[in-house]
Length: 120
Image (cartoon, rainbow, N blue to C red; front, side):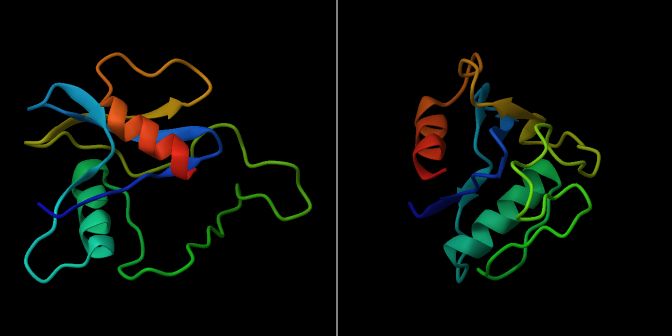
């Protein structure tokens, strides 16, 4: 069962989606469609579940927004970036930016949050 997950970080905040069928917070992701690469599946699932967009092919992601610090600054802003308004759908009822310096959210998929913390 090949699947892909998207771990999207902003400073110490991790994007989580609330899966209405499993009743839990988890990383956006899902099964690969026929002929789809893991990157393509992760990009597609991220968009479907959160409304966020990433480049369609694996490449360094460069954020050129005015909120992005230059190398001379100490750290990125502590609040997550603005995003398109979230629209609940058949699979995902909500999204949130979890501050990873706080306890794991209630009903979080522990495997997803543990994995995301390891790859950060």
